[in-house]
Length: 115
Length: 110
Image 1 (cartoon, chains in turn purple, brown):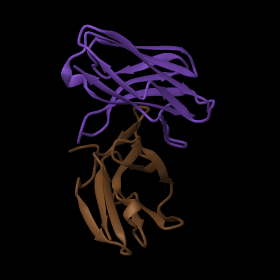
Image 2: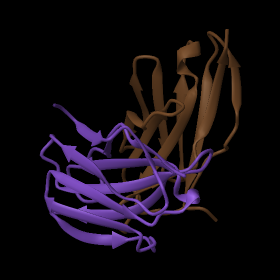
Image 3: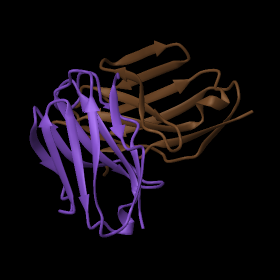
Image 4: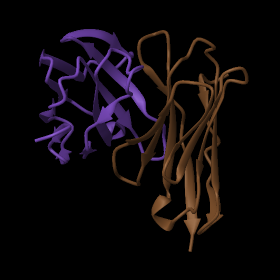
């Protein structure tokens, strides 16, 4: 595996379900990010992790719970979601916190549909 | 004022023409500038970055930076239908993250 991999690629869940999104980066990067992208809308930053420490939480509802067990893995735990949470969820990583050196590398995303 | 502004488009150009995509930013301290391409339903892909004033060329792509005017642009020469996508401008901020514009949708018509 190379780059940033996200699983699953597609997820359909009911509003009472609990599911998790997984992200793994194989680049030796030190920072990881979760973004939400709704249809026809800009990227929304959700969480930032630097060296496994959460450094930013952009007022994300508590039904989204991130976890970063090590610098290569990032999870987004989902529970009691709403239909408006349906979106493309993107994981990204960067060599340096903030991505100023080389930008971000994005995973392929998880297309989430809440029914 | 948004931190990073792009015209959402769509920008429509005929095949073979030059497409010019523009981006302005508000933080004078920004030092790194990136262009991402995002096909519909896919994730953003980094295609160009620029740090210094002037032009940087890579194949059919040229990034242009003018820090005094807080302006960065992407030129695509000999546009192809496969260039049809949304182009995101991203700028580093002093808050330790990249700030993304809303993206410009480019349509290249055969």
